[in-house]
Length: 266
Image 1: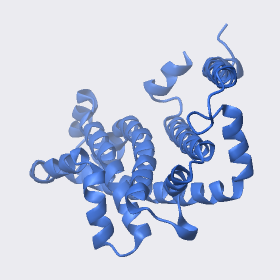
Image 2: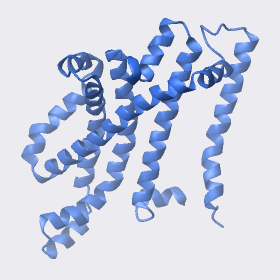
Image 3: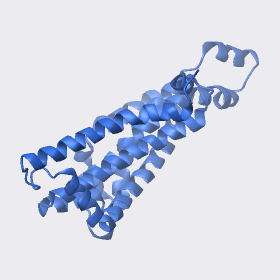
Image 4: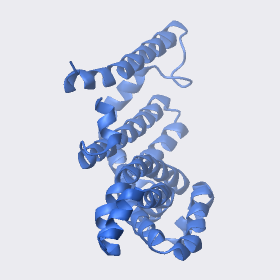
């Protein structure tokens, strides 16, 4: 008898929760047992207290960073998919432009972020550009591979029935590319958040639009290490939630028709 959906979900969620709880208990016990100062390594209870006491400020900072990451992810998706479609339609276009996509990916964002921030007067726009540059490559690469990874038998069937290039794109290439696209989207979601945080570090943004990176910098200057760890914790949780959201979107789109989802339920 196959396991129910609820029991399978519990089996997937329970082990990492148990490991995480054990790590937190060991961390708390070690800090108390060895009397580790909070400015060296704060205990989980001190971090939780910092989150509770500074909730309004941290939530505003979280929203500022998350807004940049989400806009960058949307732009990366639109740009990446457009370029992937162009690459598949014309090999010369791919040979001409794909190397530059690789160059953008391998160039450290901390090296070009100051230049972007100087050239772009709007700080928020500069942060979005930096995050988009980091997040776009997985979308381009995975979607391009997916659009090319079509079954030979299906391709012959479309050719026999004299399908147009547009029909082949909509009914053959795009469905074949969806698993690859969503795999790239899961990677890009985390990279967009990383890009937003790194760009905020470089920009040193402050004021009402300050993000979590600014809160980390300020906490470091003030030696408020529990608050620094609280901001880091929020970044980590946000990254996990973004990944889970993209995984849920993948499952919703692919449903039960693709092996990448049906095998997980076997």
